[in-house]
Amino acid sequence: MAKNFVFVGLFGSGKTEVAINYALKLKNEYENVAIADVDIISPYFRTRDAIDELEAEGIKVVTPPGALKHADLPIVTGAVAGYLNNPQYKTVLDVGGEENGIVVVGYLKPHLKNTEIYMVVNTRRPFTSTVEGIVKTYQQLTEVAKIKIDYLINNSNLSSETTKEVILEGERILKEASQVLEVPVKYTVIPDFLEDFETEFPKFRLKRFMKMDF
Image (cartoon, rainbow, N blue to C red; front, side, top):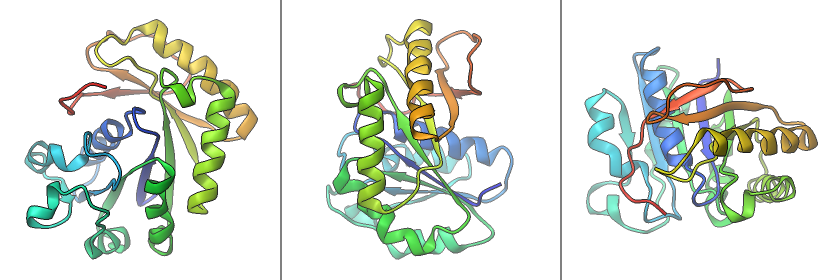
């Protein structure tokens, strides 16, 4: 199993929610888990906003110090590299997915050994609603950061109005994009307010932490 896990995705993809829930999943299996908030783009949905809940579960949350924690500034502390290199910790990175945000992954690339990188996709967002859009987004992000994205994650949703049909339609679109890109789909996300149902890809149950809907 990889040591580090990086989650990227365009604004509205839900990658922060997925990253938070993945850290909680790891905590069920490993003693030492850290999640680093390196989203330098979005002022709305950030791991640092769920710090109390995560720390209550025993997860180390790495954010800018003090008053800088809530600043909308491109701050990546040296502690991030420290946890990425610390063999005692499974470390999750929540990364801003726009082109200006994913450059952080390029900066941290020397520290991303034994790392899996996931692109979270919401097919109900404009730029990733089609196979062509997903492929274009993938190509743009990998080119800017000079990295390889290992897996796609289907997080097709309409916030609290998400239905089984929305999710399964997203699976169909992402499956086709996966075949074009030759990049496998790791999970299909199902929010905790929906009952379980059959999916083609492995299911990832998600608890909502972010308070605002866009």
